[in-house]
Length: 155
Image (cartoon, rainbow, N blue to C red):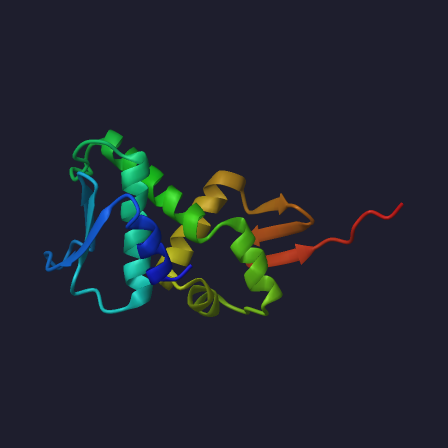
């Protein structure tokens, strides 16, 4: 999914603004508004930020800026997980495999996100599924990243 597509989807129920924010803040969400730091230079980083902030809209409540509070860290994780599954579902890994993607750099380009987003997504999938998962007629290995396609049972 590209930034513009996700932006169009989000604009159906949220207001999105690009605004000058402190350098250490990529995005913020609150009151049906998402602010994306105007200084973010790449579409991949904007997409990664937008989907996380949309995740906050769908999964978080209250002010969670204080990450020393475990409840806030849990909400942060939930929002990120929502974003990972929105932009980089298991199906996308299979599509990348079928497209001949060979490494994480190419995978990030294929999905339209940063390599950091891919790395964090894969870590979360390992936490959720272990090092591999059987999905449809495929086995997806997260470490090392790879896909095995199994023959249909014809017996």
